[in-house]
Length: 433
Image: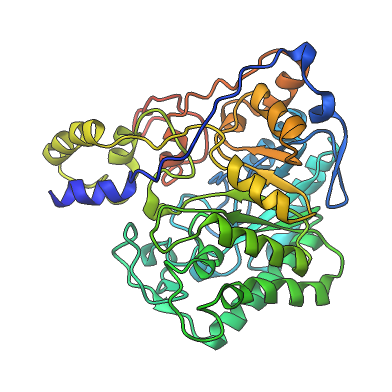
């Protein structure tokens, strides 16, 4: 039973949200606003469809990007993405994630390799934005070789093997400075802007949420105190680099009882605007919620049993017992599409800066409705760009109206062990791919 309980944490079902699926829109009647040139934080975009940050697993053991990562970004640029937001890059060694081949931006030595990538992408007149992050307690000491750290010393229900140590005031200030140094490096490398990852349960998100931040000092308690760390990053970065676009990916809600709720996310969005944030990308969920922020028709149980660190070493007889039970009792969260739209609309009403919405957006009819009718400034997609890096061009030319992605989420699970690619619901031959 302990294996089933552990797996339920990973595949936990969130609170059900209202959902109305928009009808597909014929290409000839679609509002052309999507594919008109647009401006985002001073960046010139060819359309309003962004490639959302997606972990690629294409950096070496030092976190330096490889040639394969450059080739991927070039494919995305050629494929018509309005802008590219990179997979997250770590700002310091104890914040590196447990996923395969994570990028880092913690050293000046990395700048030339990133400059090469930026120059290649700019040949296609496509802006590229670096997402920077610290993974907080959502990592493993076995990966970093260092003790896990977090706002408060609370064990993560999924990364349960590590008890994180509460960050000291001195360490928080050092962390802020390292975020600023990483922003400076990104600018020197030529990136058009950066995005702070304050979603999905990583460190900045942990500080914002009362579920993970139980501090009683100036870094916890009130919304203002929980926001203080991000506010300090903006303040110190602006003093160093001036007018350089800093975007934020923000959780609007999660599945934790004391976690983020849309009304608090709206207040945080207003604080971000006051701090000088260039744009807000609205997302949801943390790892403890399971597949909350990346939803699918069926649980990727087979993939998790083979590649996730918690389950891959279970005895085969145990896997045989657990898999069918999970498939029968665990239901995937609903809605599957547009599940951050309501929250994004609430935030859009409260701020004047651009709002980007991500999460289950995979067809041109929904994109048209979100941009033309709902008034959200930009949409971003993850999985559709994995299976089809040229999906934006296909939408623009009317070649197809929906992504070929089947929402199997094998891509998500296998990034623990392999570089990013689409598996289309089929496990690779172990050791042969």
